[in-house]
Image 1 (tube, rainbow, N blue to C red):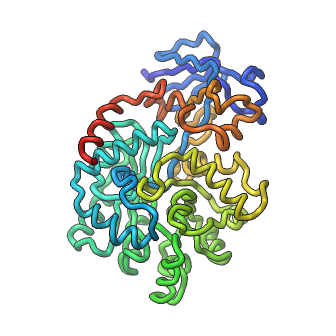
Image 2: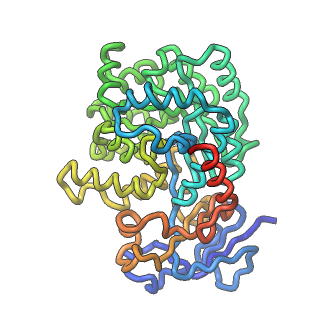
Length: 421
């Protein structure tokens, strides 16, 4: 028997703009199992769980397309420096000392932070992935977990990772998928990149990689390969519709056309890009080519949080100030980047509140001081409020946060405080 959830008297933002929470858009929503069964259920519909949605709105949750989740334990550890100095002199030496248990607790902290700020899926790239999988499955979210590949891994380690991808079964892990994740062109040689492309095709997995994040990456690629990163990756056969490319800041129009032609999903990370002074994302050219643009936070060591709502606001503000055009990137567009576009990239039948779709959702308070007045719900959600207005988070038809409480959150906070001082 499938579990049912009835959300009563909730505002469904189907008519835009929303001018009042009392304008007749409230409804009763029935979830059966892990899908939305009825968006206009009778108020006396029987259900296993009933939620009073009065004075709340239902919104799609976030799908964070680029993270290094366990790096929550490095939050604030090394700030205000260039990317390669930050990586080589601080982050990588710290990471070399981490144990599997560190990854587990760091990931649990990250997932807690993501749930609290409305994220139900993240696309991760890190190591000790067994610990990441354990944390994901315990906390009830969705994830694509990268099997990270780098040139400095020993051959036996690389083969072990290849075998893991070949033997993985999504059927045994309903909310978890694995990805082939070569870190970047500056940490993976050409043969490894080619092997990763073949492995992703063989195993029918997504391929997650950093691309053209900094000017230095482009300059080094030109010296090493006599071409730019996107052209180089296309030349060696790595780009395709299974590729999720993070950052993609320093590209020209021809490269953007290559990305479009290959069906690549591009992930914008505005806060990380600004903090590391990586550059300004070419959103207008990406949109003009019809590229599937999604959004990510990057890791908490370079952001320094995993709040996708904050990323939406930063993305549109950065676009407006960089172009001088206040009309250039709408609240609805960045909301789509952070929700349905991310879900689409991974074939997740979610990202919108619609009958038959997977039941991933947020309930946000309309009584929150930043949500009043509510002339336009989408505008308030992107520009005005913060994650404290999120009351309830539902993932795959299960309530994973209610009244802003996540099961076990106190244990996570206490453990992190004890371990990292």
